[in-house]
Length: 140
Figure (tube, rainbow, N blue to C red):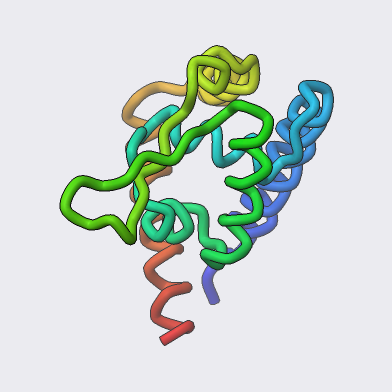
């Protein structure tokens, strides 16, 4: 039987990262889900709402409510996609780009892998990708 303790370690890491990120987001006046939208858009501006919902793993109506709130607070803007008036691309505003959650997220990503050799990170990524593929096979 395979040693499955890596799953326990993975769950602990996920819980700790989420708690740390959630505390920081709250301290900046954001919910975790809104902070996640901002950090995702920081990495990939101009996504459609459908693509952004898929990237975040949430339903489009749920995302729409979050985007409405972020737009009202001046963090994001929707722009029509040329040639398809029914779709909008989502972009961070200057306020969204300057949001301290972006800097916090970037620093957190750097800090949590600090001191781990690149080869080990590559191996960990491969293992996590294989775990994700196994999960996907169980879901289909």
